[in-house]
Structures are given as structure tokens and as C-alpha cells.
Image (tube, rainbow, N blue to C red; front, top):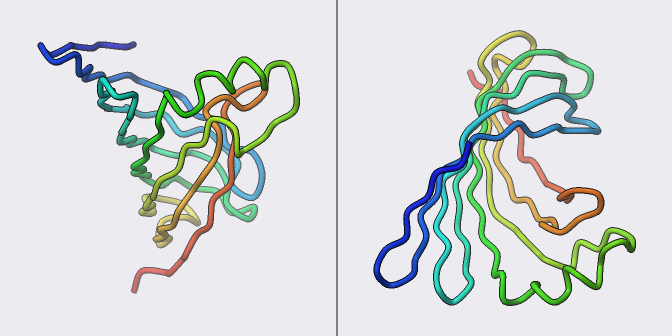
Length: 139
């Protein structure tokens, strides 16, 4: 579900729900809400919050994830059409940010982590990227 409002200067404020599939060392589904702002100059900033259900290094459980990010639509709008239907290139349509995770239950209940991520909003067949995690166990 997507809702949005535009102010008199052309800035768009939006909120949407999402379901994000994670594949790899972190494997599962994160369901949540994204809020963001699209500025007239093409800059997009956003904040995601979701609850992850799945596994990390084969250990199952749930955690809360918060991610912040930004990208500039003017920087990659033309590249987007050149990339499809080519191969994934994380330098095309770049998006990056930071994230934090807090364990909720199961084997992931004591997990706490934070880090940075980067990727492409025009990945093929959908957005893709990489992340780096500093993981510490809560005492």
C-alpha cells in the first residue's frame, strides 16, 4: 500500500508497506513500512522498519531491522534503461545507507548488529546489493 502527499514546492512525502526477501547468509522475509521524501532535485531519502523472520548462519529466529538510505534519481535515470535487460551492476542506479538490527526471539534473540549497505535500485530482476555487519551479542 502506498500513500503520498506533495507540498507546494514539489517535494513528495510517501509511506508504503513492503515485504523484502533476503537470500544468502541472511535468509528469510522482512515485512515492514518505508517512509521517504522525494525532493524536486531528484534526491530520495528513506527509512525502513521491518520484522525479519528467518535464519542467520543457519540459526532461526526474528529480529527488528531499521535502515536509512538515499539515492539520486537524476544520477541514474538514464542508466536504468541501459541496464535492462543486461546484467546486474551495483554501480548503476546506486543506493546506500546504514542499518541496525535488534534480536527479538529464537536463536537471534540476543543478536544486535549494525552496518552499512549499498546496492542498486535498478538491479535485475529486482534491487540487489551487499552489506557489512558489525555483530555483537547483547549482555
